[in-house]
Length: 197
Image (cartoon, rainbow, N blue to C red; front, side, top):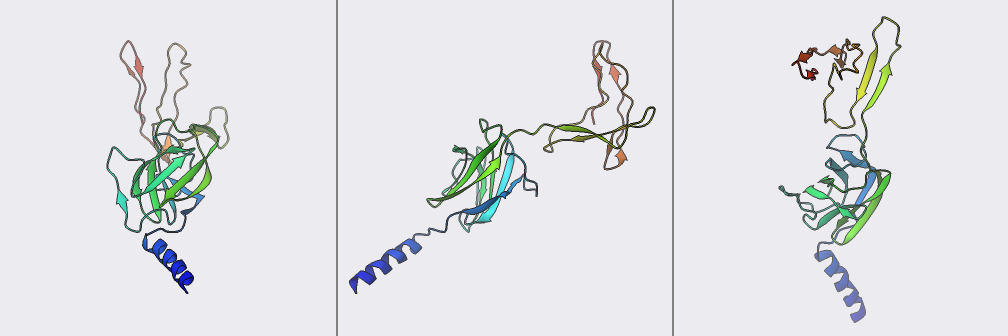
């Protein structure tokens, strides 16, 4: 009889201490900037993890400078701690610090209440992509698609790099099918400044 009581007390003590199940999440639920897009984890970028048992039921929010542990939760990318902005049982928001891996894949681990789970995620800085859209014809329009990997940066046109400029800068830039205004060159006599969109 005493043996059964001792076992019951150990189980009760574990439940009373607030320990939960191991964190549960998938690689396709590590999303860029609160969006629905999976992107490689890159330094300086913000990401969200969605899952179960990721942290406490009552959310915790941090202020800058962001900590690497918040409410007993840590997120590690290739064993390097991430900067935590928000922690909850079903969501973690974090920022990837400088020095994170820049290519390939890496293990992303969530540690909460002395329990952890990990998935493999893509890492690295994506480069902008240029591609021809449609068919190019002599004396006809050429449509160039510019894909920025993150909503950062700008598209600058026209571009001039004297004396290597071949003066073939007349083209139209469209966003979602609508032409954007063209800001002409400004020749200062020393530099030619390109228009900025």
